[in-house]
Length: 372
Image 1: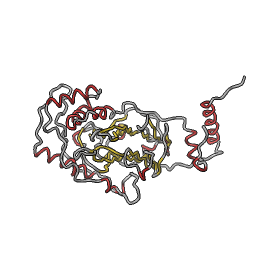
Image 2 (image 1 turned 90 degrees about the horizontal axis):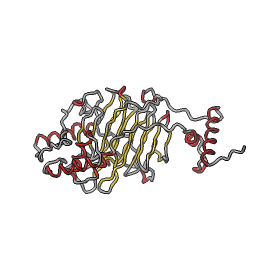
Image 3 (image 1 turned 60 degrees about the horizontal axis):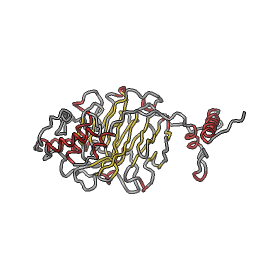
Image 4 (image 1 turned 30 degrees about the vertical axis):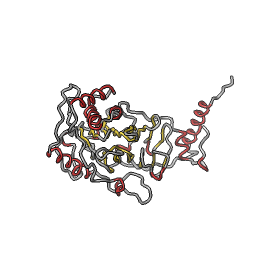
């Protein structure tokens, strides 16, 4: 009997053949640098991951479940582990024509021994690739293998998930606001890493009352920065709440004392910059010139915002941020932004990566690729 090989089966057989050559040491993959960290130990476990979020304009949801608004401009440490083998930094930029609204335009990560950056705006050196690894642009079709078993996966046109060898993940989702594209960033870490995390997403100790802890250990009392709080679903909406001096002072503490402490320094930055550019270029410590609140928003507009967010399918845990954004800005696009800020499905690694790894291990001249 004659077996006819189509393109897909030929690709599979050639991949298995070359993988066997690798296994028999006819080809040698470069040895990955080992790092003594639980985040860099290979594991297929993807259960019981706890999610933090930086979404919308942006809102922060800590690993312990505390929520606050953080309208600032610059580069910040969203979270890092004690050993910094797991680290996520975000770049927040001003929304065009708004002096009180910022969103994420880039995210940079340390995945054990490697740097991964995803840029939805201001790609380094004008590169057409939004994904960079160790200072170089890379192409990600379905998946791109990192050292020590980590991986970058692409979902759809521009959404990504970065996976650590241990199974921890960061989901990156694209949103569109005022005609420009921005990012929701959702790190997910296992419960075994409690009391080992630092940054804007809190200390992950199971207590949401001490999540606003500055880099020097100062704890800002946890107060909701939303005027709607948790009663939106019950329709017990308050009238417009005046912005008291006490509230303004609290935002000053939040943005300046707490927030500034987690600004990225140049020496610790994971971002890629064009020649002559540093983190200072993306920093504006005077932003916002006015705190975005629900002051002056009518009960009717709040009610409309709740309806918009419910119609979009936004969950109860994301409702406050959604209502705040839609009511305070009048931009209903924030309902969809809140909707995609929950990574309900933890992705699995792509297990058949033989061809990908061969291409990386054996570069072909002139940028050629294996023909399958």
